[in-house]
Image 1 (cartoon, rainbow, N blue to C red):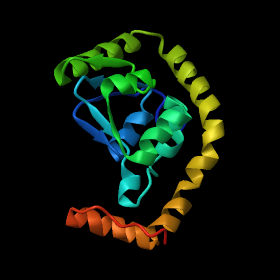
Image 2 (cartoon, rainbow, N blue to C red):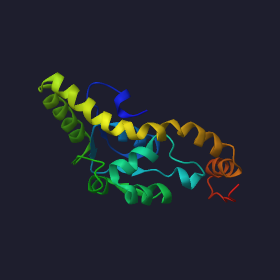
Image 3 (cartoon, rainbow, N blue to C red):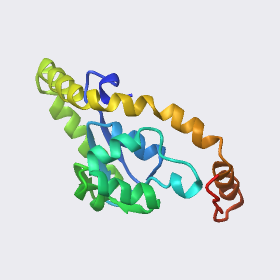
Length: 172
């Protein structure tokens, strides 16, 4: 599902702490993203024999650039708020969670003061430009999930995670 299916109003996300996997994927859906300085991001599904199939394989490269997204999705490494801002994933960083929330509310208030029809038209135009190209990638995610989740490697990843050990993948 692309951004256009979400709302005719802007979505502002404010995060702090661990924003990993599905949390990061939901974060990427937002039109404006704010993080507190201690936020830690990750897409580490590949380290467990899965893949970031909730939309991150589409949105992360679009927002951060191919090399930045692949660097983190393929390794499972974590990154902080400053790195997220340098990749274009975060528009503002606040010193702590409370200040981040206040910043998000202030930004929402400033947007609410603008003409609603202009806001709606801006979002619709921008989302239309992006969504036209992403529709096919999103529609393929279910098939990709089914194919991966039927593999021995997927089962090994889940078992290893439950047992607190490193998985031993065999490519099957």
